[in-house]
Image (cartoon, rainbow, N blue to C red):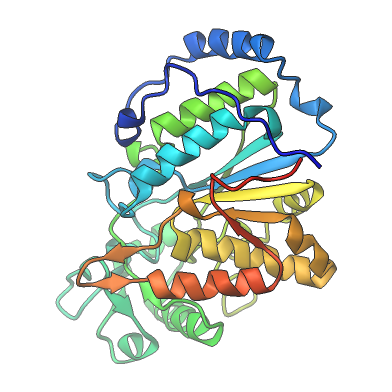
Length: 335
């Protein structure tokens, strides 16, 4: 076995710009990427004898830049390391897949969906429990009936109670009201510019299109995981979202899967947990193909409010016990 030979980092990469929003100069980078591939004899990805997939979870402005809605502390440094990793291991990353958290204002985890007895919405980071819904402390907003495709407030109320009860029964995080974030069509929804640039450079140099997976756009459920919704069916058994079978099959078809992104405690952890569940049903040995780039992800921490660091560490210890590798960008890995 040999270890991956690292490429140099292109001169245009500026770590200081990772915390900024800017337009990627696509045509210029395309020319440079073609020259890079020629200079360093980087073959097209389709010629790889072993396929390494890099899955980037929700590396979006809304989570990764300090002035945006749900900034994850540590995300800027995480993405600096991530960009360097993509450039230095360009010749050995066969494909990049990015997930995009994708939301509208009237979803079940946003303030507009809920009101109190005075018609006021809950403040961000409010937790809504089954008791809160039963006693009427929080109730779904009746003005949203038409946009949610429902006909009467009684049905909407029953669904709201069912939903939070399902979260509790499945051992999920309780329903948290998040600030409006990852809004479809907004700048927060976009990939971090420096990461987008690295993905584009990879696409041209390796002649392998970056794959984009949208998640989280159903108004009546959550999608921390890109692979399945938190609650998959309504009380009548109608689907709220489907298992992303095509993506699961694609991820498990590679020889190595490396995972990075935000946040470690939420969307990364839930995606890995769902993938591990699939692996354990098929062949537990497949877990050894999965590598978590832990210096390219951080847990949700809101000082004085919530800190999911310990929960994330416990979850990742369980992943490791199942055979998944916990590594950093500085770890030597075999070809």
